[in-house]
Image 1: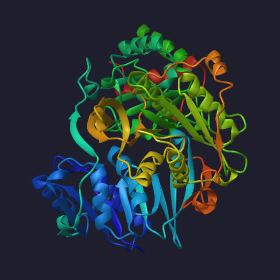
Image 2 (image 1 turned 180 degrees about the vertical axis):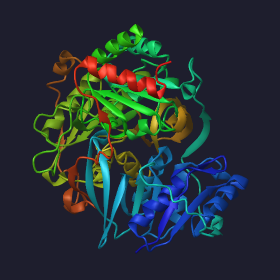
Image 3 (image 1 turned 60 degrees about the vertical axis):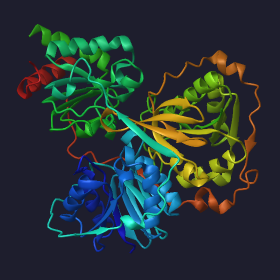
Image 4 (image 1 turned 90 degrees about the vertical axis):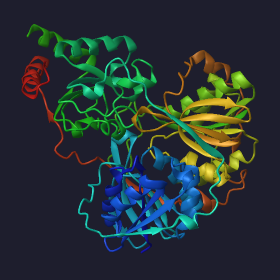
Amino acid sequence: MAQIYAYIVHKDGVADDSALELITAAQKIDAGTGVTAIVTGSGENLDRVCNEMAESYKEVYKIDNDAFAYPNAEVIRKVLVNILPGDSIVLVPHNTFGMDLAPGLSIKMDSAYASDVVDVEGMDGSTLKIIRQEFGGQVSTHVNVDISGGAVITVRPGPFAPDESKGAGGQVVDKSGDIGDVSAKRKYLETVVQEAGDVDITKSEVLVSVGRGIEDEENIEVANELAEAMGADVSCSRPIVDAKWLDKSRQVGTSGQTVKPKVYMAMGISGSFQHLGGIKGSPFIVAVNKNPKAPIFQVADVGIIADILEFMPELTEKISEG
Amino acid sequence: MEILVCVKRVPDNEENEIELNSDGNDIERDDLVYSVNEWDNYAVEEAIQMVDEHGGTVTVVTVGDEESEEVLRREMAMGAEKGILVSDDAFENSDGKGIATILKSVVEKGNYDIIMTGAQADAGAAEVGGMLAAMLDLPYASLVNKIDVAGDKLNVGREVEGGDQEMNEIELPCVLSIQTGINEPRYVGIRGIRKVASVEIPSFSASDLGLASDSVGEAGAQVKKVDYFLPDLGDGAEMLEGSTEEIIDKLIEMLKAKGGLQ
């Protein structure tokens, strides 16, 4: 079995939640192989993350360079190709960095690519058996991946439980001297931070959240009326922001806001993993959707199969009556 | 500015409930409504807007069967000048790398400044753009939600976690995967599609593109889908049933108990 490596995403000296989830994924691929963490960055923040990772990984590659203060996937890809053996199995979180880095990495390492893996069933010879999802999570697929020449695998954040056992007593190995050429035709300029909106949904206790099921811009008012009757705020899923019907500050999801209400009313939201990734703190989730196969029903506490455009006004009326 | 946009004909997620077929080895495709992949449509709109402002040509390409021609015509009705259909039985069951290999050979037949893909499609892999860039040795940016021309380079915004936007300078030629929301794609009516109905769309086969049969399709695939199944529902939601009035009464009780009515 080839060596397994896990790329650690981190920010401001703190490792991303995915860092410990990758250990679990690696063990499901091969329980017998040790996993090496790869941490790129610079200065004190890098050292802090490396030391944190050494509690959970037996071996931690530290790759220090001023150019890595902000991770540019175009550069990191070159570094990994230079440092890792060709038949390596490289695990990367399926987030905005992983999606930038990993597909091209599989080409440059001439290895197989498995994307957005939600579970691993194990090895059969040189075939890795994994599970993915398609059509926004409506169906799952069993997938066989020939990893005889190595593999790059992006792992969905969330489904793999973090390995919090610690106590690995790992070693930090400085690989900074082996990185080779770090020039790139893409240069990081700056990060433009999301502007605050009129309502801070991250502080809302009750959210009426609308998705595609709202169908039309003028129907947003129906959600506003329900929210008003409930004393809630209105949030939404990505398609509503793409259509410019609500401001981006109202978007719940990994590419929007992370909310932690007591009650979350998912109205006409199918429930993609990116959307669910923005809901924390185990709220009471009510899902109303006319598609009985909508993935949101897997995670909701209460489900109702209905057209939200008919259901919401009736609920509003009943609540208003007291 | 010569721009190639790679598009795909996919089952429309909004119009369909995806179900398994009776054998469980595929989804039930008979009554599916197909359309252009949503992300690709944003990419085409972005390309058209860039060409309107800076001059040049937008070409749309798809790998698929003859029915895929309809999505090319739809995108040409939006304003893409040229279409290319790439079609061959040998391409069936290609994995992401196979599709990228086919597209690479198309790119090499032209002279493009920018190659765009949608950030992802129906399989949710988000892989073809990044693979294509690596095969062509071109710089790549994924999840692009803003493009400004800056001299002989581009300034592109990438959508990253928390609603933030990561700005990058990227050299041309380059490959970009486009995120939804970057623009507001124009409406295409029947009349628009009729206007481009007679425009000839060249079709290329594996041999036209000089592709070895073992580099694409089933033979070249390292990643093979075995079957489809319905995800384990886990505990799942408690489904409320009955008349709307009964459902609403029950829901209000629950909301009161959980602090959802203030």
